[in-house]
Length: 131
Image: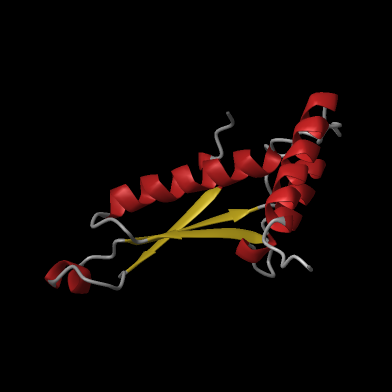
C-alpha cells in the first residue's frame, strides 16, 4: 500500500442529478487528477502499465482522471474517488496468473462419450422406421 495523497490534485464543481437546492448551491462533485509520468512512487514499468491499461481514463497530458458525484457531500465524494483510485491502480498493477493448460481425465472423457451415446440412441428412436 503506497500513499499517493501528495500527488493528487482535486477540483470540485456542482454535480448534476436530483438533490434539490443542495445541488444548486454546493460543489459536491469531486475530480481527482493524478499525473502518471510525474509520480515519484511508481517505477517506469508501473507507469507504462497504468498508461496502457487505463488509457480510457487518461488524457493527452497523461493525467489519470477520476470523478465521483454520487454522494451529497464533498468529503464523501472525495473519499469515494480516492478509494476508486486505489482499487483501480492495485487491480491494474497486480500481475495476472498465467493459465495452466489441463487435459480432461480419462473418466471425464468416458462420461462425456457415454452421455453422447445415450443422447444419440434417444434421438435415433425418434426417426421413422422403414418397413
